[in-house]
Amino acid sequence: MKRIFSRSQITIIAIVSMFLASCEDAPPTGYVPEYVVESYLIVDKPITGVVLSRSLAITDTFKMENSVVIDAVVEISSPTETFILQYRAKPKGGGEYFNPDTTKLIQPSTLYTLKVTTADGKIVTGSTTTPERINWLPGKGPKPVYQYPLDTLKLPSPDSLRFYWTPAAGVSEYLISLECLDTLEYGKYLTPATNEKNRRMKRFFDQEDSPQYLETTQYGFLQATYAPFVWNAFRWYGRTQLTAIAPDYNFVKWFKSRWTGNQYDPNLGSVKGGVGVFASASIATQEVFVLKNQP
Image (cartoon, rainbow, N blue to C red; front, side, top):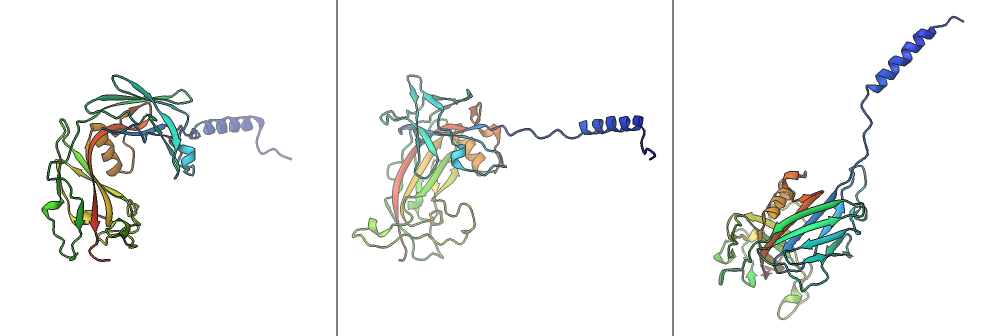
């Protein structure tokens, strides 16, 4: 049988094939996870809620237990002492590092540093200077009880929905939060108590398919030391926690990164050796009760 290719032709074809194969794109390398820190120090509160996790590849199915890191050494230091945090699991999944000595409270106007040492030798660090204390201005803070107007088509904006607090030196941007403390119960908090259940307010702009629809806490961003609230700021009746927040710069950057985009911006993080936030804030809080306009 006559040969189609000679030996020399076969050799040339093999060499060309090897060359072309070497010009192909290199196979993708394995995903390299990063450590993620989320920690907020609140003035006059114990150290708690320090979350350490590991980023996962987008090809993996996300499971909290695969992400959380439970065996790191987490240290938070002030100029006078260092706290070694312990890990505890949360009933609803995940976990946090905390200081078991709850008598040790975060102090105002103090530099705190973070050092995380993981089991594989990685080190993540950060620092924050806590703001001054803030308080509601006497006679101008939130009232304990509010009656939601009967006429929902003409919702007034009374002066009682303007809340004022003291400024913190060096802080020009503030946050305000509203958190419903009990979305189920309502009548049990009345005098006399009833069996009436809580319900959500009907707002014309609510979108039930929105990821934020069921969240019990919402935030506002302010460049002033007062909040001109409107009735539509509330989502539920009943028990509500209203909080004014004086954040440090790390807190403000992280807030903007979380609420103004869906991608992580390393310029808005505040830790080295990983990603995430180590921030602090002073707060003024008041629990209020919003009475229904109808059952």
